[in-house]
Image 1 (cartoon, rainbow, N blue to C red):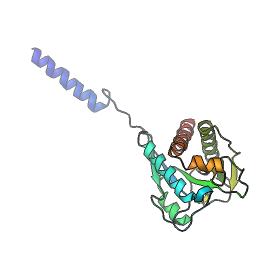
Image 2: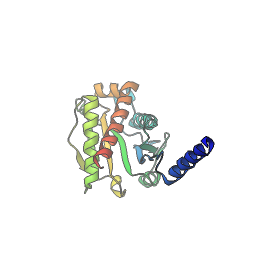
Image 3: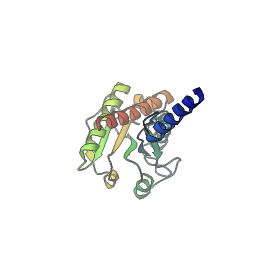
Length: 208
């Protein structure tokens, strides 16, 4: 009798499991984000204090974003370039295919060594989603770096050819002595990477 009861309970649990009533598991939605490290190869981008190269700094930060995102089940990072080589806008767009968001990383350059701060650029005629992504990133980076963040601006960017929310972040002036020093330090690069991921997460949460 006891054995029959246990078999009955086991059969019941099996049926409930098959019907999805018992032990239902929910799959976490995954958002694919393309991180584009600007310049590369012969295109060095800006050359700053102590011959720092924009292409090298942004590639390091892109890799750090991808590395930190491994611990986030809801965000998957894909890089448009993994190494020091030049990519045309067409190639960058191709490498960003399949992503739901795209963020291009750059640094600013000025002949005025006192110019400093972080700028978020959006393509012209940006969608509301792109504007929301830009603001989420600006607030997150500002909160993390405690630095100056210029207002979000629009510019004629190749990102406009993507049919997804896409922005460019200029992470500081490579020609400013203080910012160049920080941009070349791993702890600060990690802080920027963390702030970018936090901004992405804040944006995604605001959309649902």
